[in-house]
Image 1: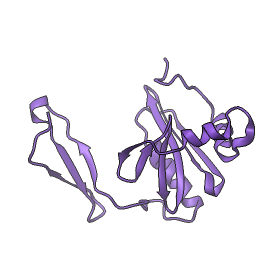
Image 2: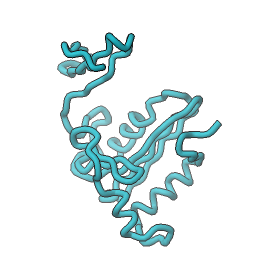
Image 3: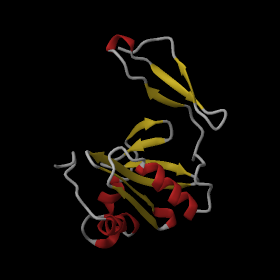
Image 4: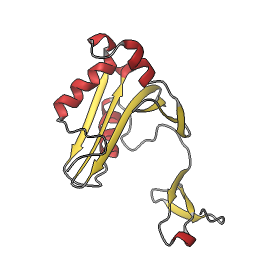
Length: 158
C-alpha cells in the first residue's frame, strides 16, 4: 500500500525533516528554495495558504505555521513547523481517519501555553453535506456553544 505522495517515515525522521525549515543552511535544499516552498502562493481558506507542498498559516496565534498532513487506509498523520518558535511536531497514528491534526494542534498549543481547544482565528467553518448529487449543499457550522449547529444553505451546489 502506497500513500499519494509516496512518503513513508518515522516520527524521528519527520522531526529531522523539520530541521530543514528551522535551519535552512543544512545543505540539502538552498535557503532560497525553502523560502519559496514556504511562501503563500494560493489562498485555500481565509488565513490559510498553500506554498509548494506545504500549507502556510501566517498568523497561527501570532506566529507562522508550516504544515502538511494526510492519511490512507490504516494510518493518519500530520506534521507542523513553527520556525519563529524553533519548533517542529509530528503526529502519526495507526488509525485511518484519526484526527491527527487536532491532536497535533492540541500538543503544540499546550507547549506554547495556549488553551488546546482555542482556535487561531475565528472564521466560519464550511462542511460539505453528503447525499445524492442533486441534493448536495454546503452547510455552515456555527459555534455559539460547545456543540456545533448546522444550518443548510438555500442554494444547491452542482
